[in-house]
Image 1 (tube, rainbow, N blue to C red):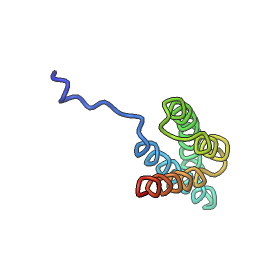
Image 2 (image 1 turned 45 degrees about the vertical axis):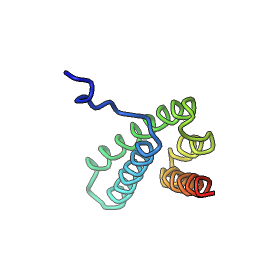
Image 3 (image 1 turned 90 degrees about the vertical axis):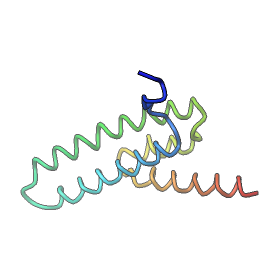
Length: 106
């Protein structure tokens, strides 16, 4: 198979940002199913998805800091605060993107 035909996933800022927003959507869904009575199975599924997603985001953010894709501040927001509120990590991705845009516009 030619190398141009294979898709190699990258640890890019955009990929991490999309994963962070996906994790936030999973967490929002978890909050909704937690509030609605009788959805214990969905609560388990989305709780598990949130927990595994948080672990994956921690590992990916550590690798991204080491590769200098994201700053340490952003990784800390995702890893530390992301366990109980992944919206903060998503917000920090937007904030970092805006900071990068303003720096490159200068």
